[in-house]
Length: 307
Ligand code: PMV
Image 1 (cartoon, protein in one colour):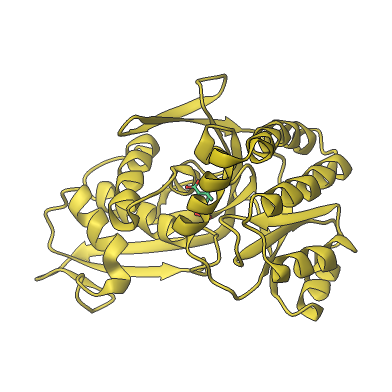
Image 2: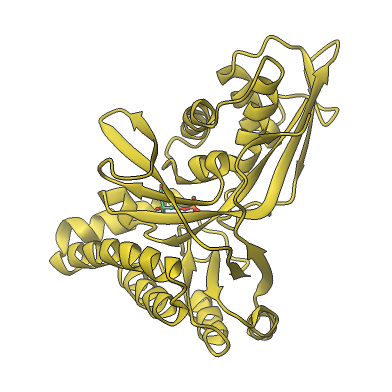
């Protein structure tokens, strides 16, 4: 049995989502695949499940209460540590393979279990990555249920409503700064600002409005408007303290050949995304500015078994 699941890209709303604002993500065509077959003992890529690199795989095995033992093989095209949801893709693909050994897979069950796995391993998580990897396509997080509800994820006193967001097929250019920054302290920085500064609170609310406007603009293929909203979202995230000079540099370079650009994910380094109809030109501009760059496409397929 094998299963595959996509990485993700946050288009609008990161950080603001922590305060109950909407966020929009899309699954991307970089995927993780996990193969599982019965074996005399538990193995992952021939090694022990206790190796740190398999901590999501091991936690997924425990969450799925898989009897095993199984030999697992993990292949991922999703680069890790750049905010593209590599751990979620591996977690969801692992759960897909384990559930697929017993019967048909249910993306909602997998999304819930994968969120728990990420939460257990990372100590903190929003369900965006794991739900995008499970559902595929566009995913909108809202503080209340609305049309297109996929599922609800709950943890402690928090509740997220995951919705289907119908987006047209889109190409995005990713620029990676090569600077890694942990998400937790960045989330804490924003919280501290929001607690003491009303302007930061207003910035968070404006990001929420931008997310909904951005979704509408992308839906009607008004890329000029979507790009403007990305630019504004980037400025607001920078105001909230999660920017970085290298991000500004890559964003500025990308904007010369695109509709708009912003940081994506937690920020503080990490990656940026640009919306461009000349992706090769945008890739070249980002590389010339010192970043790594590549093109990704939205992927409508969520977790799928491969037979
Ligand atoms: O680094 P990523 O791609 O997992 O994005 C983090 C997104 C935040 O909104 C900053 C945090 C969260 O848990 O939603």
